[in-house]
Image (tube, rainbow, N blue to C red; front, side, top):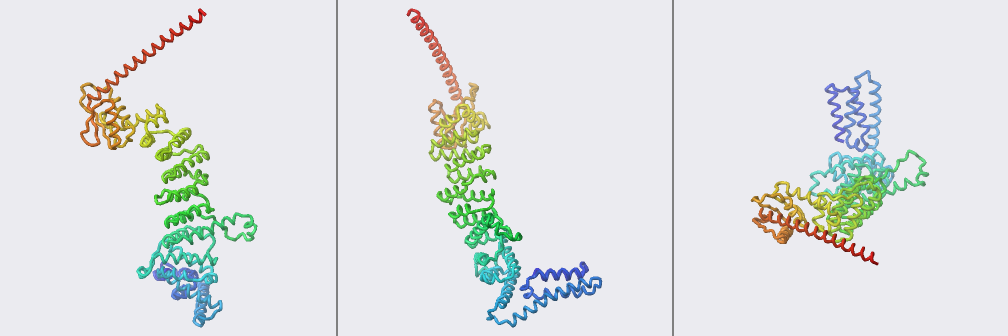
Length: 553
């Protein structure tokens, strides 16, 4: 109301300044008055008065006398209608039970609601709307219903707050509860527009109201009704009953509507209803729905039983997941939520549906680590072999993650000597990149610390005998320190610990160990050669004896 009044005042100022002709201004003024609902016109008669003044100024233009006369007739008809309604309201007995009296009372009631919206008294406006009966809505003109619904949805969708003088006496959740009651009444009265709930503004308004009022009943009821209406529209009987092609087509529930329902249920800790709502959804699948479900699935506050139920609902149909390219996100969420076996079974199904699809090795590695941590050793070996056959490659990052939980001998038997040695060499290259005489094992698994130490010592094979710089090993984990000390003691190599987290091996001890290793390798080679020679001689003697015995016989 105030906005329309300010628009008319602006037209007057433009005419006074000479920026706009009086005839054009009067035409726009009459349009504004005609677009104003009758309850608002009755509440603010100044709108018609300003339009009348503009028409009086336009009457001086003889060139547009015919146009001004038409505009004057349109304005007079509106004013006559308003005067007639006002006279009827004044003479009306409030106890008159006739339908005409009820309709006139509705005009007064809706004019009060319009005034509350114009004055930004949203708390009172929604309270007034919530107390209007279904029978009142059924006899209300369609235009009035649409305008009130649009105003209420716009206010609620933008997260409006009540007036400041009402904040101390009432909570904002009361306003949102009244909005839900208003929408529920429209739905029960069957005057809610078809497909209203799938509009973006409607979805945001219903979501905000449901969250703040802590009531998801109305939102779920509208979603269920839209699902049923869309499913019915796909039947043959519905198509045969469509005699009028101008009837509105039922639109499928939007993904945003389902996301709003899931987020509302999650906020209200009603996780048991999420799988039911998801399975009843009849709209198109999308990545937004899956992302929302996965965000709920990975929450720590979700019970294991509920997470299991939700995962079954998500993985019931994997085709949309493959089509939207969400396989990796699904597997990662299942592993994060502790459903390792479900993740492995889902991985096999996804690979069967799309053999060419590649799952990131980091996700598969997390799956293997989780299986081994659960002490499912047989399942771990089977899963590793299946992934290996499907192209799983153990790189540097995968090797470090697996080595943190899997013993070296187990990983060696799975990967093979060549791949295991290559990964170990890459890890050693990074650990000794800063200095040749420094080995940094602070952020590496404790199980491979001894192997990295002796590999590092082997790389110092060409160290001069007069070298004085010691080998420094930086460690952080107590398990790594214990493993290194036990390995050094086993190989009879002395060491010192000048400070916590650091082992120092003297250069002389390194040289002595390398020499002993070289000597041992020579001895092993000589012994191997002697054994081979002895085997060769014995085989010759045995062959000769066999030949002689066969000849004499």
